[in-house]
Each structure stands twice: as structure tokens, then as C-alpha cells.
Length: 307
Image 1 (cartoon, rainbow, N blue to C red):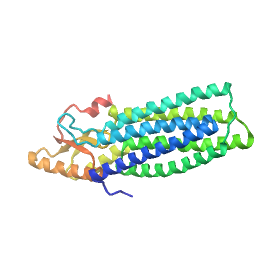
Image 2: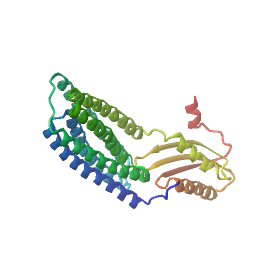
Image 3: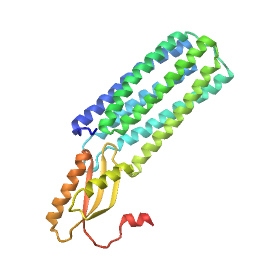
Image 4: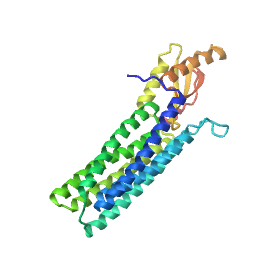
């Protein structure tokens, strides 16, 4: 089902609300997990606390990045500031990686120096609350990210998806320790969380660099652009289509082949029709169209890349 395109003001407002909700929840969960860690001595809960502290920093970075990325274009930044969101995701990746390494080192130490856990029912209760609260936040973030296509909100949501997995595994770990007294299971859970944090950081880095290095958009988007262009009878062909993300919007560059007998004014009007059709599908995009007379032989980017 297609969604009604959002105007820029609504788009920005939704992103700000999602970022604010993320910060508030991260602070709340950090406080609760700190209390649970002190009461129980669980390394698994401690690993989740470190992750939540990382979420606080990451969410603050996301909030700042969104405020910066939604600024209007200026003389010195004519494409806007959208890539601030990709930089935000990259910084968050380093926080996640650092958290993973910290927990990994602590887990290795705990293997050689085991510790008996206390107050596990309290810790389990706090982790169950954390799990439910995180599920609510993720649902809201996913909704906002779907509507706004925000990479920063998507990256922030990725942290909390990891939290769902870690919170669930910690609840299982604490339950095993409580009822079966298998204390090494707590350390094993922390190790698995650390590995997953490192993997999540790797994924965030890959996605952020894709935007910063202007990787082409997905084949689905490129094919859809081609269908939109080809739907106009006056278009004789098109080539050298280039697409990339500006962080919070797309940029499309297209060489449009038109009847060479058209006046410049007529060619401009027809190009505007194609641009309007693309913007109806991708309302926050920037579209640059160069008109070429059909049948003119010239060296093309498509041909260079095919070599």
C-alpha cells in the first residue's frame, strides 16, 4: 500500500519526536539496569547496562544529527545537510563496537574469576520491563523510519533491536542461574551479547559508508525510476542514470533523450513532466535532468562502466 508523501515539516517533526523518545527511554533503562547490576552482580545485566549507556550516547548523537540534517540548504551546502545522519550512524557504530569489546574483556575475566549472583528475581523483573518498554519504542521508531526514510532513526532502532535479543537472552540466563545455579551461563550470555554487538557495529559502518561514499541506490529504486521515465511517450530513451542518498533524501541525475527538433522551451516542459512524476513517487528527492537530442552519438558513462 502506497503512503501519502509527508511534507518536510511533518517529516522533521516525526524524526525529532522519535529521537527524543529514544533518549528518554535510554536514560530510564540505564538507571534501572545500574540498580539491577549492583543488586545482582550479574555480568549479563552489566553488559546490558553498558549497551544502554551506549544507547544514551547514540540517541543524543542521533538527536543532534537530525536537528543538523534537517537544516535547509545554504550557499556553501547546496545539497543540504542530510549526510549528517550517516555520520551519526558511523559514530554510533564505534560506540556499539566499544561496548562489545568492553563486555568481551569483562566476560573473559569472569570466566577465570566466577562470581555468585544475588537478587536474581529483582534483576529478572527489571529486564522484563526493559524488554517490554524497548518493544514499544522499536515499534514507534520503525513506523517513523518507514515514513521518513531516516537513516539516523533506523540506526538508532538497530541498537534497540539488539536490546530485544540481549534482554531476552539475559532473562533466560538469570532464570537458569536462579533455578539451576549454572553460574557460568551468565558469562556465556555476556560473551554472546558482546559478539553480537560487534557484528551490529560492523553493519552500521557498512551502511554509513554506503551513503558517505555515494553508493548507488537499490536496483528496485533504479528500476522504478526507469519505469517512471519510460511511461512517457515523448521520451525516446534515457541513459547515464545516477542515484545516491543525501542522507534524508535521494538525488537522481538523468540524461533524457528527446526529439532533437523540439525547442529548448518545449524540451524543458517535457522534462518537467518526468521530474514531476518522479517527485510524486519520491517527494523528498532532488532530480537533475539533462536533455539530449535522440540519436546523437556521444561517449556515455554507461558505456565506460560496461568496459
